[in-house]
Amino acid sequence: MRHLGRWLLWTFALLAAAFILLQGWYAAHIWWWREHAPRETAFMAMRLAELQERRPDARLAYRWIGYDGISVALKRAVIAAEDAKFVEHEGFDWEGIQQALDKNTRRGRIVAGGSTITQQLAKNLFLSTQRSYWRKAEEALITLMLEAILDKRRILELYLNVIEWGDGIFGAEAASRRYFGMSSAALTAEHAARLAAMAPNPRYYEKHPDARGLARKTTIILARMPAAELP
Image (cartoon, rainbow, N blue to C red):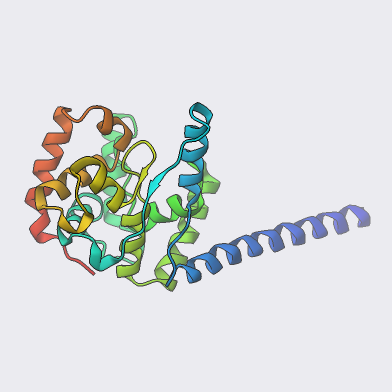
């Protein structure tokens, strides 16, 4: 019995040490990204692997662009569409989460997520797309780290650069050139609203640019943009 107790204690200690090391690894990366651009995220690596299964020579379209080089319209559009309380909350919009839960309950299926920009950034930077309680807990911890280590401006800058906007297309600059043939700095309000409307399902809208839902969401986002508060 004593040997079993020691074994359990050592197992627990090793698991705790591994957990702490993993969180430290996440925190170290986030600290590095205070002033450096990510070369690749976990989500990018996953998408690239999928692309290379079909085309071994496939590459991602990804080009980092600084905060001031991104259209103010796009910043407003993304906040209006994804996280209206971005500058106010500390990583979690509890009211938005409750509204999403209520909506999902009424519909009997998941139709709204309630995730903030910081939560989505946490997932894109480090985690898989698999849904599990462990992944949601890890997402929450990384969200807290992002909010503690980075300011809101840097969080938004990272998000706009690593978000997926089509098949192998990542970031505002690649998306702007792919869909409108211009730099992200030159985007108009209409361009920005359309990109923000595409963000929840970019690969579908890339293939279905005339989808009625896309046009409707673009109009709604345009109306909300003037009220969006920027960091």
